[in-house]
Image (cartoon, rainbow, N blue to C red):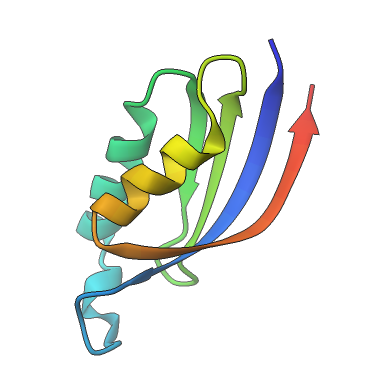
Length: 86
């Protein structure tokens, strides 16, 4: 098993930038959508900063599949960091 931790910055693309989209419900929906992916072991979504931290098994899922899922939910994604963990 090869674990990787990625930290992403997300921003909703279908609004004018107000903080209404950064609700707990929106964060929970994003977290559930990522957590359902096979190979994802841990997800943390910070609704205030828009940061999403994901731990996943690189042998089961490539990080690009995670970012694709987030983008399909209407978010712009920026990769802040990637590192292997044990």
